[in-house]
Length: 189
Image 1 (cartoon, rainbow, N blue to C red):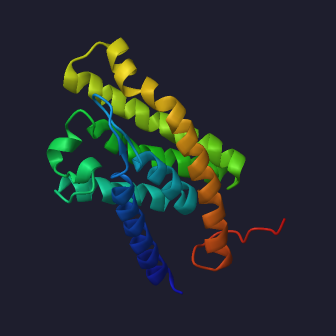
Image 2 (cartoon, rainbow, N blue to C red):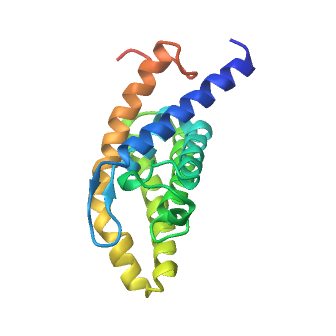
Image 3 (cartoon, rainbow, N blue to C red):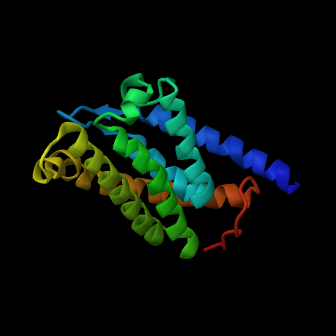
């Protein structure tokens, strides 16, 4: 397959992962200001499977899809007002989280241990972006912004990081073995 068709294939795959993120965004546990959603699980899976370049592309596509009004954000919402609203920092943070997660894995290796480290770092990146925007949009003091934007999500975030790591590494290995994804063919255990 030539490089142009390979890039096109990976662009389509990134778009599919953007759509998966929109689907997982509908898994919601309501909290007063910011709900717990499946989005961060999708970000971790995307970056673990696709790496930094295409994982980041998938999250950019996801943010664009939602910003133009497609109902891919939490509770089937969409629109630019969400990007600039109280939870928009998390969505912008997904782009950077995917990059950080993917780059850590590319610089180390795609194993559960490194994926857990990378997904935890990515989760923290997304939480920081979200909390900073939450603080400024609500004009809240830092202690309240941390209370609303980070603390409720740490434990569940670690669970999602573990799931993204476990599932993501296995799916990535299988896709590489099937020659559906570029990368080093995993060695048999």
